[in-house]
Amino acid sequence: MALAFDAIIIGSGQAGPSLANRLSAAGQKVALIERKFFGGTCVNTGCIPTKTLVASAYAARMARRAAEFGVAIHGPVAVDMARVKARKDEISLRHRAGVESWLLSMPNCTVMQGAARFESAHEVSVGSERLRAEKIFINVGGRAVVPDLAGIHDVPYWNNSSMMDVDFVPPHLVIVGGSYIGLEFAQMYRRFGSEVTVIEMSSRIIQREDPDVSAAVQAILEAEGIRFRLDAKCIRLSRHNGGIAAGVDCHEGPPEVVGTHLLLAVGRRPNTDDLGLENAGVACDSRGYIHVDDRLRTNVPGIWALGDCNGQGGFTHTSYNDFEIVAANLLANDPRRLPDRISTYALYIDPPLGHAGMTETQVRAEVQAGARQALIATMPMTRVGRAQEKSETQGFMKILVDAETKLILGASVLGLSGDEVIQSILEIMYAKAPYTTIQRSMLIHPTVTELLPTLLEGLKPLPPGP
Image 1: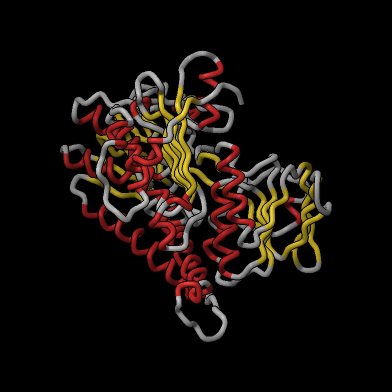
Image 2 (image 1 turned 90 degrees about the horizontal axis):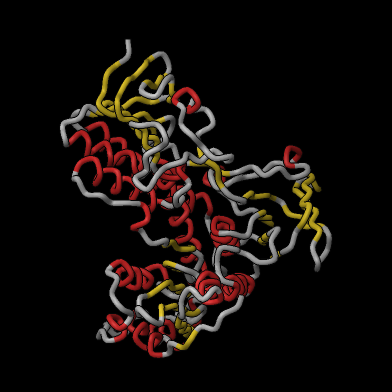
């Protein structure tokens, strides 16, 4: 006999607990199922622990730069990775415990631990238990991809999750993957004291970004001693003197990279393999991402997919926004939709990259097609007084505007506080206000954001072309 609930939530990542809270507060009987760790990727292996490590790496970097600021440190700067890991673990575990405690205290919410599997469109099994509900919400997240590289099964390797267990400084860390996760780990471990080589199959790192952003990020990391091997085709892995060797067919450089340890950072995949989605008739794409409409509904009535498993964002903030969209439609008669949100994210190297909306490449394509006329402005961070005061003048700001409507189309801020400055631009974009709203604002000095009006004064027509 199946246990009856009004709603079943599979997974306790960013969307799940908040949705459970809203549904239970509305008087619905809810079951939340968690396979392993409460809090999902962000709390356990993603944002919180990695940004905690980034903070430790930043402290090490600033300690080595102390003399630039007139501060004397006697003796070399040493990194105690065991202590770094302990601090990361303490912060991450505190958040995990907080999520668990919150769920267990919710009225009308039953928390179950184990692997969930669909038995039909309205029934889910957890071990020997069977649960039934008219509404089921899938929030199972994703995990690191293991690429099909020659020799991959012959060498030890880490991914972003297993890196969380590292409590020493690898002498030479080789990273396969030159995108967001790989670059964050590259910089942090370089600052901890490792030699670092990043291998990327494409012609440039972070392909999602404009070429000028990719080039600037690479220059920042190279200045810290990180080596890059781009256009690396036919990557081959093997053991080498207690470490690893990566064979690379590149246009430049030696044909082999030899290191002591290997990190794979080549993307993620959804945790949908063993959910039994076929038993419920839920449709997925070839990679396992669940198809959803603009309200996060799957093709099966009564089943929703939220977070990383639906392929609609892959960030903590998009997962939480998924919850907001579902809750608004189900509980507040508020017709929020996926297309309402503006793409935005950050790359947490130092200095960080904040991005919102369209890239210059995307806007240029529309100009080339005659779909719009656009304006563009750029400014190096060397012009920002706040950056000069902190001796953090790397990077630049770039903004794109529709010439007719004066609406902001997109922006990239690579530099001091770029992850925060981009929020000011994003709010204007959501308000659908013209760029002159910022341009005519009086902003606080000294800040990075105060240069946005000056940046916008430099708008010029964006020519068509690549």
